[in-house]
Image 1 (spheres, one colour):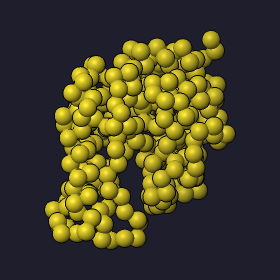
Image 2 (cartoon, one colour):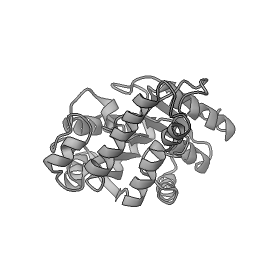
Image 3 (tube, rainbow, N blue to C red):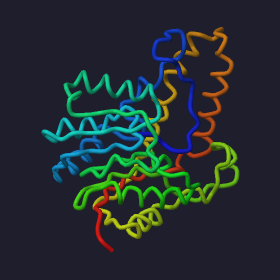
Image 4 (cartoon, rainbow, N blue to C red):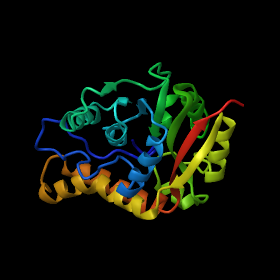
Length: 268
């Protein structure tokens, strides 16, 4: 799970203790609270999926929790980030799920890994095609329609504009941010319907969930900077984290939303 469009912070090799740790304060790689995650999993579990496919899975926390809830279900997570994949494998092993889940480091574009009863795509629609925003959302929905079994479920976590951003806000966001980069919530849901889904549940991340995520996203690096101000990489890292904080607080905070859509495939 990730949030599209956001610049990355300092990363570190898994075995290098002298550089900033990576996202250890985050349970989910996105604005998702424990309470919302539990509600989502409860709804998805009622459909009794036997197979779960997680696109752009990161470390696959929501997938692992779903497997813990649905007895006998198996999961497959796809992501290009080797560090996240390794974290997912370790978490699966620690929770006695290693024999029921597989993490693979590969691209999701054109994947033949499905179809599955439940497909998770949380902040990862951009990984399903080479289409540019906002066309990537339509392309992703068509791909997800192909990857889900008849009668199954798709959980799509997708960005949308809560309101039209101003020029000043766009200038402060990520490089190349545009007002037409995302749809509004109604437009996003309409796209899902036009792509062969019925929206069983529509919900959006709250401001508290966003703030919790943004703080957790940067906290490891901020703590490292406070303790390593004279490190050779400190200036570069400080510039990157300060730029991201400005992008959040002066750019997309209260403007960029994340919708969680529970979708059921239907025939047109």
